[in-house]
Image 1: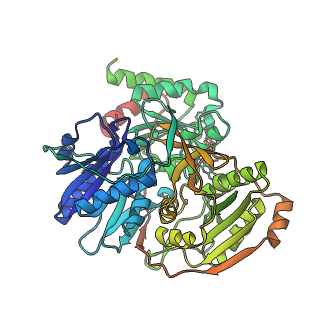
Image 2 (image 1 turned 90 degrees about the vertical axis):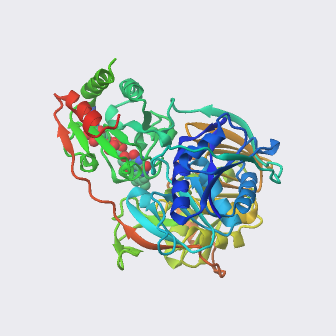
Image 3 (image 1 turned 60 degrees about the vertical axis):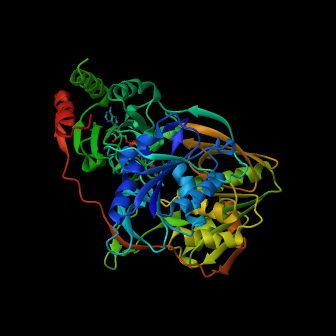
Length: 320
Length: 245
Ligand SMILES: Cc1cc2nc3c(=O)[nH]c(=O)nc-3n(C[C@H](O)[C@H](O)[C@H](O)COP(=O)(O)OP(=O)(O)OC[C@H]3O[C@@H](n4cnc5c(N)ncnc54)[C@H](O)[C@@H]3O)c2cc1C
């Protein structure tokens, strides 16, 4: 019996979220007294045996010409075959773009109950319950999975990566693979160097910035912090910033270590997508802005004055 | 082209989130219900745009829920659905909902829905439905073009965007970028009153999960304010106290 973790990759590189899922899955295996195993689909440039450092014992590697483009329908059948071989009782995905397409499909295929967006290890002492975010981060729920096989997708940035000793055995897996129905015809990078959902630090700005021409200082601060950029909904709606930067209840939900909100009032719909951030800093000229109630640190003042000063101070702390 | 749009009702985004019955149930008293924004703003409006470009297109709506879902169904009809099906049972979890919809979802060329609901944030019904129908599925979709039986779709991935090509029938989970939100006009609202809303009884489907308890997050300790004249102190606190960079 095993806990099987799906390892997601892009252009051969394993995503950070998958290292979180591997650590999380290995912990579930330890907790339930079974082995942790992983499945990798497609060619990778990284050393798969090294995934053992998160606690997985075996990595099934599936390669096939039909698996070059991400196709949830085709991938699902492959993962289900590996799950059967592995004797998987729990299958873990990251709740990211791939996991959102795969976890529900795999769950149906294996007649397994799914909890998506898990934020903590399952409680296996008495049944099997998993904690997840609901109401866009405004509450948590405990969900019991009542089927024999269970599928969990773990929220990104919800579980700390642990790296120890260990090497995994890498086993090539020959699967029956359907012809793909999906063809990737183009792919573009939209954000800077750091993907918004995976970022440790996010610098976000709102309507208080007055116009798109004022984003340079925000970008400079983000650059200095190695942060991803985000914005409030009206900013994206007005096309000041691309829509993929829109965070909140109807945009992207994020949970970085540090979220810096500049000139954002802190409407309930905005807070819903960002309130899982570990530390929240608010810069707003209005001392009554609701965002201060959700913040850990704040400065009441003019962003145009304060942001360049923060950038300079960060530079100084970083020693350049 | 025959399009099916899956819709659901969710509490208004400003609704107070609280629980009753020993924290086992969402407190519905006084809550305003809306069409799930992802279903409305992106899935439904894109379906309407496709119909505007090709008048032979039909748009059917489906929801799983009790009669309390009828107002949001009428709103979707007012925006531009042709007819609606309500499957009469409580939508207690994703698999149950997907399995109910699968019963009525055969024969459509395109099934659109929001990438998730803003209450249970499952992002699961679309993928489950696609698997039950053995159809291709793309979620986090920001654009959808149809030419004959070929669909060209953009989907957001970590730090980027992919353009995919596939064939109908197809299930698509929609998000921002797909379309611009609209408001129903008077003619739409009048027409919606007489559009068919068929209520069908649910099939017997076993739920795979059960919500057992809800909790509100712990309150924040309170904000530590730093003077605007002392920006370096904020940066020091972030570096040394919060240790976030
Ligand atoms: C159904 C629904 C869904 C929604 N979903 C989302 C969502 O997902 N995400 C989202 O963000 N919003 C969402 N909204 C919109 C939300 O209600 C707010 O309108 C929006 O978040 C406000 O954006 P803002 O804070 O940038 O702008 P404003 O509310 O206009 O706030 C601007 C802030 O900037 C401050 N400011 C101005 N000048 C300066 C300066 N020089 N220096 C410092 N501060 C300054 C002001 O004091 C103010 O607090 C949704 C709304 C609805 C109805």
